[in-house]
Length: 357
Image (cartoon, rainbow, N blue to C red; front, side):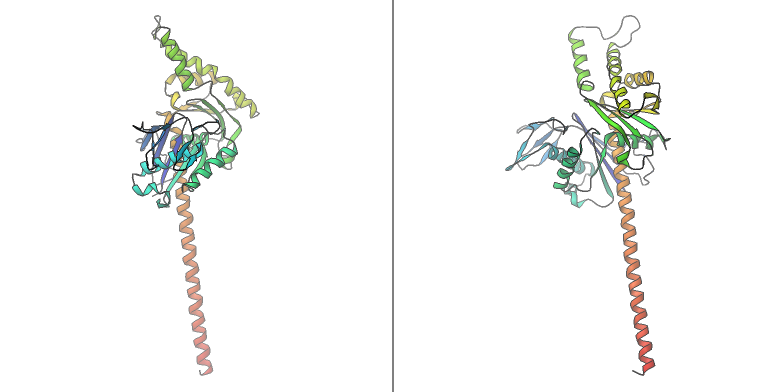
C-alpha cells in the first residue's frame, strides 16, 4: 500500500500529513473521513551537541533558529554544525528530515535511504519562488539523502486537495487565496497538461496582509481599549477588522488576474487556505466580494500539506507500478532467454543425432 507524506514548511508553522489510503483516487482528507495523521510544529530548529536537529522545541541550552523558511529573504540565519555553516535551504531540508522520521515513527526513517519504495514524500514550496530558490532547496534535500522528495508549488498542492475532497473538478480557473503569515494569491488552471503548467500568470505575494499584520492590528485595537463587541447588534469588532483586512487585500487578487490577462469574472471558484484563514469571516468576505463559489477546509492550515500528501502517495504508487513493470519485463526477458537457450540445446541435439555424433 502506497503511503504519502506531505510537508508544508511555512515561515511561522510547519505541517506534515500522512496519507495511507490504498487507492490514489481516495483523498487523504475528505469531509466524510477521519482526519489523517497530522503533525504541526512551529518552524524553528534547535541543535544538540551532536548536531541532531529538533523541530519546534525550545532548547534549554544552545541556539534556536527562526525565520529561515522564506528563501527569498536575505537572512543571517546560519548555524554552525561542526566546522561548517548551514544555509537557509539546508535548514528547511533538515526540518523535512525531522518530520519524515517523526511521521513514520521509525528510527530507520532518520536515514532517508532506508525508506521503502512504497513511501512517497512531497514538499510544497511558495509559488513565487524563482528557479534558483527551488534548485537550492532541491540540492539541499539531495545533500541529506532526500533525493526522492517531490517538490510541488503550494497552490498546486491545494488544488489537488480540492479535487480529492470535492471530486473531479470542471476545467477552469481556481483562485488560491493563501492567508498565512503573509498573503499568496495564485491562479491555478484545472486539467492542465502538466503540473508545471497548472499555474496561470504570475503568483503574487505580499507581507502587507496576513496573520502577522492582522495580529498587530488586533493588538493595537486592544491597546486602545476599544470594545470587542458592538453595542448595537453584538457583532464582533474583531471580525469586522478581519473583514476590512481581507477586502483591502482584494487589490492583490485583481492585479493577479490582470497579470494573467484575465479578469475576476474568469475565475470559476476560490479556494481559501492558510492558518490565518481559520475565522469564517475570511471566506465569507471573499465569497461576497468576488461572487464565486468559495471552498475552505475545516482546518485550512492543513490543506496544502494534505494535497502534498496526495501528490506523494501518487508518486509512490506510480513508482511501484513502474517497478512492477520493470520486474515483469526483466523476468519476461529471462524467460525468453531461457526458452531460446532451451531451443538452441534441442537444435544441437537434433543436429548431433542426424550426424550420428
